[in-house]
Image (cartoon, rainbow, N blue to C red; front, side, top):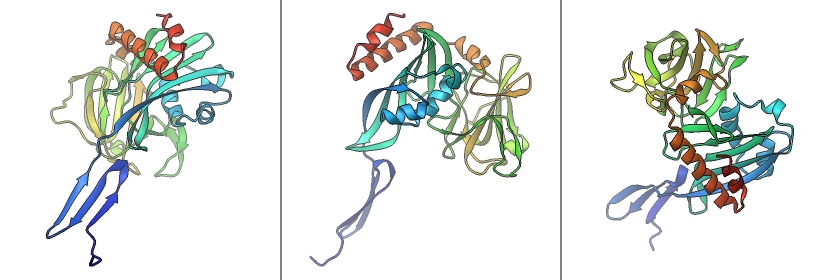
Length: 310
């Protein structure tokens, strides 16, 4: 009645609210809602590009980056996609009421090109290891180096963001918040931990005698991580940072074969290393479950016909 505020609430990102309550004493609290996870499915026909197909089907266009990252080294989207190919996706979203929290996450993708059925199953456990199948058979296990990050720069010649001249970019960059966990992309042995000039703090992992992965600009590495230690795909080996020559927090990720940089999104040697540790029985079970869930959400018999490929 006296016009004084009783409470003030400030809504911030991801549904979080900061509340201040004015009584005899000032009280504040942070309210973090428990989101509901909604599973959705969609189907798109590719006529020109992945982005255009997803937008036309009203599915998240950002999934085109995820698909290109997973299948770019296997499928030549420019040459092999001739038009009329059907893409089926399953994803999940976190929601509070009608509001979506964070970014949607792909859990399953199915794409048939030239008589071959390519499928990708992403885990929901947070380990960020994806399994790629061709015609129902495990092709490779892929662990992305940073969960939920944006691919900000690809392999090849580019204008350097700091020096301004055109030079070869020997890896790929993932832009994300400082402190985000960085994971090994394939099983191997730690070959180096330390500083390398413009790379800043670096962890390097040897995968056999000829292949190495490099994780640069790190802000920190786990306590106890040591040279010579074995790691599995998905193990945390550092935290995203901006050490060395960097314009902001990001992970610079490289794959070197016989000491020469190669495109991390297309090299097969890491696939072979990860494949050797894959449990085919469990992987095929995950594929069957993913197909069934897609079938359930699309409300059709699409998955029933493809399951027979097993």
